[in-house]
Length: 548
Image: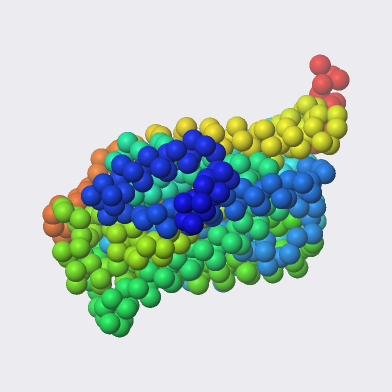
């Protein structure tokens, strides 16, 4: 019966994907002398992939316009939108990052959650009422009226670059985790990336935002259930909650409240400022977020969606932190179950996927792998859909390249979505070149442009005296600042971590300061230049042109 079910499921997926799974299972599965995913686990993962593709096909039959494709006609349930927004921002990157950070570095990262009440007040009551007065498909339409076409195109271009890099990193890290789970060599990462990206792009390109939102809700349940399952099994294996740390673990970093110097990797204050700044900038300037707010009825509904998103984020982040603690306690008590040569601190990011595939019962492993697969696709689908909306609205439609019929418009959107997804998979092949653990790599790459994008919205909607030259200079200074901090080690030389044994090297300026300092420089410089060099009134400019 399992063979028959496997054949049915494989018929729902691209043939090449099924061949890849079969090859990997044969070469690296338990029959080849390796411990890894069992047949039932592969069936569960295939069932999940086939189900999401079916959902995309189902919703594709109901689409009659690009408004339905991109924003669900603007009247979607705020609870579903909130869950979808959470799933978009909590990807496989976070699903691996939080346990790895708690296991190998310590718990201070979770102090960043203290910033979320302030995020809700700022975004919910200061920003959303302004945003929701404008019903737009692309968030960057809001920039043109106040700052001109060039700022709209700048914002759209930065968003596309940001999301392409972020999705490429996501695909790479997901593929790397999956290869660890199946016991495959890293040479398989590009092919696993292709599989992950193909499934996500197929249902996204077919189903539009409604398919994305519905699958995001399913994916959230899966990833949270996967985390709870790991905690429950570790607790059962250890006969209780002996894994919970009651004191600062020797392998954890020193993580003070205030930084001792700029190189201090993580502090309580730095975590709060970094996470709070990132959330405000992402919710207020990223198309994936603004697009979801626009899919609700009004500002009150958008605020409810935001409340749901932040609440779910707190619950899941804390749960994933407990996963890290549980894994630390388990492996410390069972060192013989670690792979040869594994270091609890240096290899912390890899221990979660290793535990899933090697130490969970067959069937349960498949559910948790499906959860990780779900976390990847929940972010890929949102990114692809949002980039497609921006490319069409701010590019093709804005410059008169819109097809004559709405049906042709939707077909073009689907083709663009598929092409964008394919490009992301190709780009993922170079993401292994950025040094650092998952937390550091994420901050140093995909988050570089979050603050300058938000800065454009801040200037356009909240700074009445902003000038074009001021915005340009502020944006450039903000980007340069972010790059200098993110890559301060390669640019200025790494410094030794005090008291580390063996000796560890780190950046002279911690990644936690990228977002707050870059935003402060951007807005400070931009506002100052705008006051010194204001835009001339349109009447004066026209009079000068006539005089010439």
